[in-house]
Length: 129
Image (tube, rainbow, N blue to C red):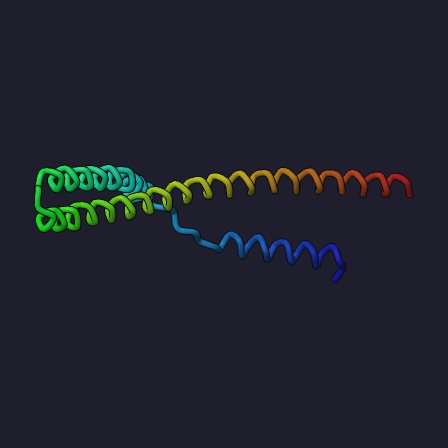
């Protein structure tokens, strides 16, 4: 077995194994829904914080203000944090998928250029001999 046929066999095996890999498709409907929820939750949370502040500001007694601020304010803050987490997670996932696809295409183009250059060098060496 020559070095060229061993390389060809290894390349064929690698190509076959890559073809067997199954990457699940991201569910774009679910992802879009969660991204929209991630946009809506911080808005709802801020509205709840403002409503809790407004209701607590009308009450002259601190004992009545604290439960309003805790129930509305902390719940609203929690919704805002969860919504921002969802938004950041799915925005970054979309950005990284785009970046990875771009990276793969650039690597393929670079590999094609290297292979072409090596073929030209090989042809020049063959013509020289």
